[in-house]
Image (cartoon, rainbow, N blue to C red):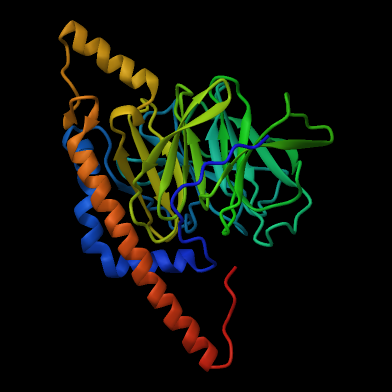
Length: 367
């Protein structure tokens, strides 16, 4: 039986990416008040910094995965109608240091990438702009390269369908404890869900994913923490974090995301302390947001507690009594205020555009 958690209503309408662009242009200054708080602290500590995807081939980065084998490298890929290539990007320079070409497959609508506990990368060719037009989708699996160099390889291919029919999806997450693959559907009307693979994936026949729990978030990506104790689902304007235990979610609350032109990707850093949020677009930015208090994965909390006990480290900067960061709370409130303002303003912009289109006798329907 599916479990539903009704959260705040988001801008789940057809023009959400355009709304995000309009909001970012008009409210960039207002959001900057709330958004950089955690990012700034991460930069000051020398931990994780924002970087730009410099490769001119990367125009629609729709998936992101921090490498656990090559420190500071992030794997990404384009969306639909691009060559079957995965790019390894150096977060210090923003330059591509490895290109993996997948032979024997054609990318139809690739939306996600995630690392499995076996060191393999899983790539989700799971998008469906027709929202139910494709009877099946695919997952490509291959070992993360041992060396950072251009290479060509043949991935393992899994054919996938859902137990309740075809649908659009943009998030693929691999549980680092069990190795089970999860997919999250993307529904504008708030009727999305997370699905789980059968006991074992097979290359023979079709793998039917079963609906596990519902979400009202318009999901554009998701990620498990490296220790498997947290699951994050992100949308264009917000994200929700869950404790994950024995394959079941327990809601923690909302996580503020940077306001981006078209936020389509997220990954945990290898140490689990920070989320890295990516966006589509030429020279798009990957922005860190440090987790606070109970948002942090269990192993991060345990490491901090151990450091406190032996005196090798005090509480994380900004932590208030009870493990909740005061500046994190303030940033969250400011971020939510800016979010509501952005949605309202962008709604006015979108309404004006629709009225102009109607006056002109029609308009073009977005994909």
